[in-house]
Image (cartoon, rainbow, N blue to C red):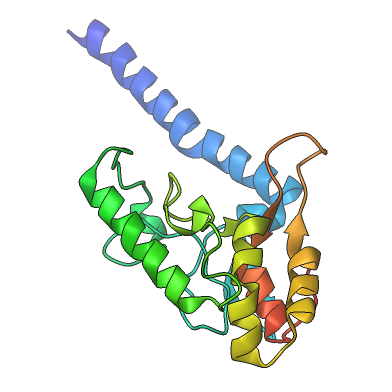
Length: 195
């Protein structure tokens, strides 16, 4: 029996040390060395205070701010501890009712120039993770009139900020152009230039 248990125990201890201590330590060290900002959450700091993360959305619902994608996380929106989609399919009546209500709310909140325009789909649906920090440029432009009116700015000024906040496709090929909502709202508040 000793001949069987000893190698099993030795292997168990060795694999525990390698996979539970050595490997995580190496990966953590490499992440901190090569991707320090990303490994620490891509945090956005202003005046010595962390105001959010570049990669996790936040709830904005005041008229003076751009609104992001809906969050499907519960019990709180943009809760990274419960990341996940709603799992509601396109034929689900609950999803259809939610989208209809969101479209009505958005149309009621935007200026008269946008009330008849098509509402961008990313403003009425949640992402797969429920944490998406970005919206499409079309979704940002849809909100310009409301934000400009709430802030007493011209639509041209707000559109210029949206243009500055728009990130193109990665390497010019991958993904779609996008706007980080938190960075855009910080720029609106005059906290700092877009980075």
